[in-house]
View 1 (spheres, rainbow, N blue to C red):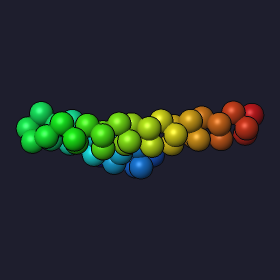
View 2 (view 1 turned 45 degrees about the vertical axis):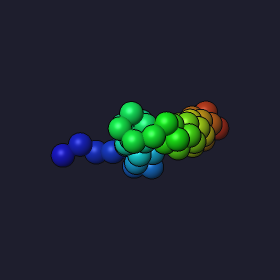
View 3 (view 1 turned 90 degrees about the vertical axis):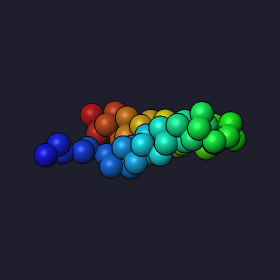
Length: 56
């Protein structure tokens, strides 16, 4: 089994991929959800990066 370091990032990424698939299958409006999830994912990654820097 693969150990996931940050499950929130994995969930955000999978939801964004699902939104991109729905963009092509259903409506272009799902692209807005993918962009929002991308921004949330980026914020989460930056928060983790700052925590690592502050520890050193």
